[in-house]
Image (cartoon, rainbow, N blue to C red; front, side):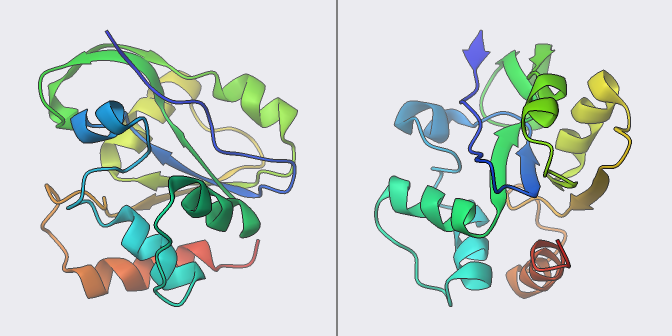
Length: 162
């Protein structure tokens, strides 16, 4: 069974980016979005830090949190061959109900791809007072949009009135 990471969140968080489950490279590194071809961190730093990507993982997390943005995965556990979401079986959700109760300032969930949204809605439905936004996945497996198009959509959502 694969196990996800703890949430990245603090008392000032108003929006959470929701992934599905860390891939092999991320699990091995113990860091969200560690696969070098995933564009997640590049998008975050193009939006929040003029494209300047810090080297350390802690610095990356601080940029998210200093922009009132959290990070967690829809799933706490699953079985999966490889890193593709389509291979997920025997999943168990993270406890978003408790998380949202503990952090009442959160008003928006930004799903990094369709599968993250699918699993979240499967287990939690639609939470009253929370906006749901499904974004194109930052994964290299999602080639339906080029980087510039993904960046424009992510920027519009991440910087929308919080």
